[in-house]
Length: 291
Image (cartoon, rainbow, N blue to C red):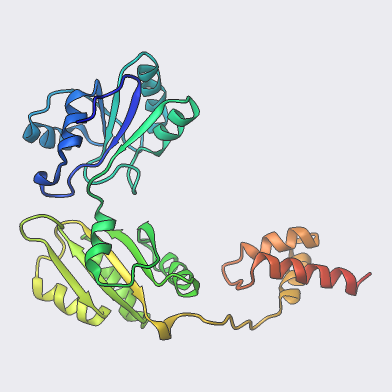
């Protein structure tokens, strides 16, 4: 077993549902740490009680992590060890922890990872999809307009497999979005992973919706969603309906912008499908044309 070191920041993964998944090393680090920085001290206390750990718990959630980072840094500089945990899974993966780690690195404090559960990785592992490359996006957007923007981005990339988190209260709405937009995707919805009644819902959006409705209480428990874009749904070639030069000229006239400013304005336009390099090349062509 490792000996805990003074003045060290430990990033400790905790179970995502089944307390027996807590690693012996993680248990030891939490037992020996001077301070445990927890996302929700009430929820963390439940796990610590099961493990027989009694330590000093300090809150470290997304609303106070900027200010609390200074406190934890000062404690570690004074020789204390700090272990960071979240409500479930690995800290920093759609959870607090990044600000403290950044501050610790800047201060030259040693940061040690204690690996364990991660809901996104677990869902990917059991999805059955191609995992030669994948991307994790955190929580899926709530608004349909933002969902459509993200979906178009997924269709244009080289990667075809993506992992997300989703609230049980929005899971059916998300599946309906895929249905209504006739999305060429396959899904693997993982619900209550590692718990007694964990379930996976797999297939096309239509098949997954049927499975959710058959379950009945689909709006309970957290979801990790793995999405695979089907080959015939990928954008292999960008179809431009308006030339890059025309978009730049429109931006320059409408906003009284320079060519350089127009490039930035067009890039920010949600209807733009040109890359930054393509727009820069178009700006150069316009400059030569009017010299």
